[in-house]
Amino acid sequence: MNSNSNLDVSLFWCWQKDCPDFGKKRCRKHSLKERYGKDNRALLKCRTCGHCFSETHGTPFFGLNTPIDEVCRTLAPIPEKGSIRGAARISGHDKGTIWKWVDLADKHCKEVNDYYLKNLRLDRVQVDELYFPSFSLQPPTL
Image (cartoon, rainbow, N blue to C red; front, top):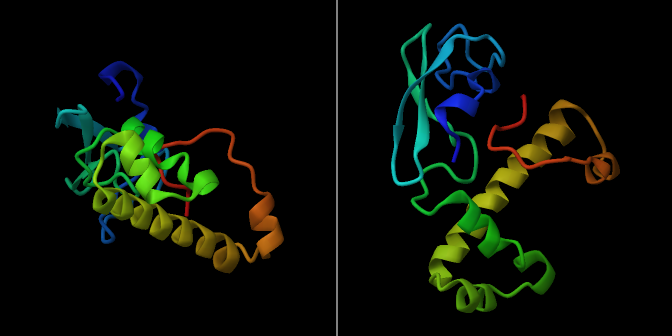
């Protein structure tokens, strides 16, 4: 995962709804509190309200014990091949685990789509045409 030296904490925001800095990206009021877990994930702290949150908060990877790259490698062939059983055989993960990951990714995608369709009032064709040059752990600015 990220090391202390290359984690840009300004890309995150406080998730505490009653915090004055809730949702404010680049406010520079967050700091790296510690690293945790076998993936060495960052636990960040809002200096305004003191709330702590994981670098994966707001992503489909939040709360998973499996490394992010392993989840992505396992899920990548499913849209093309459509086989949960095949993904389970190839990856060695249980079908139930893969279904859970697919469900998490699906819910996350629905939230992002709803934001674009409802809040930005884009039509479905415009949302389909959006291009995201790189995958990021940080959720989109809402």
